[in-house]
Image 1 (cartoon, rainbow, N blue to C red):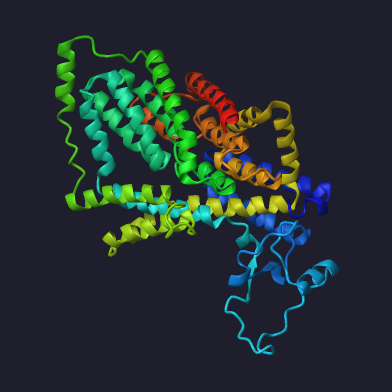
Image 2 (tube, rainbow, N blue to C red):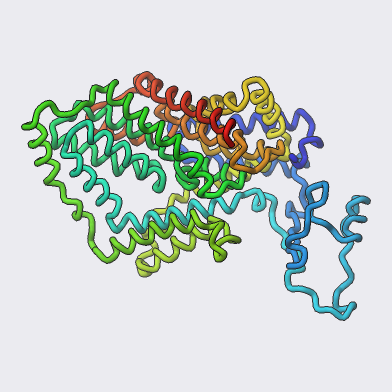
Length: 510
């Protein structure tokens, strides 16, 4: 339940609602106002916390802190009561009824017992408790791990090897690069995937004298990064946020999302080949010439150490298996995915133990700060009743148009603003409405599909499409905002229609 939605006046809820709108508008106009995401959400968080403290919105102890009592081992697995709280002692229940501060139990030394070490209170600011630290840990750990493994040259090796297998045929190149984009987007961040594949595309087409196809290739690849971002739980930030809220495991997420990703990828490549007239080379002589040209690529150029290359390949496989088998392995069953990600990142950093500072510098601290402050804002909005108000709108949408209305509205919003605050807010609302945390509940998947695929509607909908447009401009094939929407809309609408049909199918079989 929303903590304090019923104790806040409509005026205060409206005030904080306007602050939320202002923050979202700032994120949408990030490039226009020349401000980083973390600055926009950071200022919003400070303003929200200041107003919340002075308007009595946040329930806080003295100094704006809330006491967190550590749980003794015997109480750790206590059954929740009807109110959803852990069972309390008789004295605690009595104090809860009176509304007075809870009386402490008599010192256990007086009973002849030693107090357990866990029985103490930690005073933490409310804004610390509002941050989803599990999400932060996954992003930080996975980023460090991927940054180190990429130094081995493994991703470039795979890309060049695949290019040579196509023989330089344009249609085969499109299919290969499209599939590669999806796979890289599933395990790397979308921007990294787009930079690797997009750069290789530009070099390959230039060497083959097929630069006129560059726009079609890059547009399809940019759109496929968001499709690939649906494949696993760690493929995109909205997946991580919703997966944590819905308690969806790595394997469950993959099994549900993979069929759609395969279908949407095939459909996108088919439409792309038709719209941009990308076909096979006409005669045998042209194919032989193209094969000779791409055969000049050397996949080993970026490999400085063969030993580190194979170690990174093995570590990458182990990382995926560790996440996939987390709930089956007794050693990791009780660990958070963020702990596993940080663990793998730390192990890989041992190889560069004397120069880890360059990897720390490469971490997207702006993204992490953005997340932390965004969660603070959302926590304040929850206490101010804003999420409850939006939740009523979401409930109305679902009541009128079902889960598909949630899917399409999430896509529409994520096309013009960042999908991260959108997915975080919708996940919080679904939790507040008592939505069952299960991979079988379609509302969660509506948010996942909508927030990921909506980024394909406009060039500002996702960072990867921005990169695609940037590479186009660099190679003298610029694409304006309106032109992008015209060319991308058929793909985006097709992907959303397929997602709608897939959700209906899932509703029937799960």
